[in-house]
Amino acid sequence: MKGVYKVLLVALIVAAVLSPFASSSPDGLEKVAEDLGFLHKGEGEPVLTAPVPDYAMPGVKNESVATAAAGIVGTLLTFGAGYGLAKLVKRKKSETN
Image: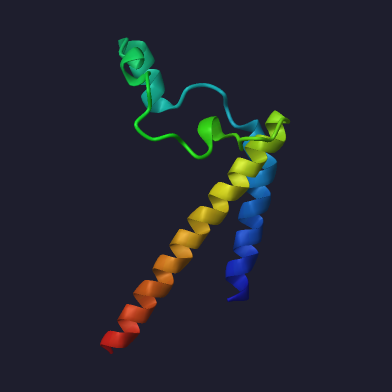
């Protein structure tokens, strides 16, 4: 169990330190849409608003800190979802035995 928390700690450090250096270039899908001329079709009023738009934590004025915070929150949410799913699968598996 301690190993899981060590991996989480490393992931959080990586997210906090490296996320401000992420490329500002468009991702693959956005680049293809740009190249093929249909990027404008994806613009407009969103159906849902993103909780962390453009990979920057809202309300944080410093762009690097906002990006690092978004990386940390994303890492924690992903870890929590994966950990919860693993616990659920393990519990279901032990119930069937």
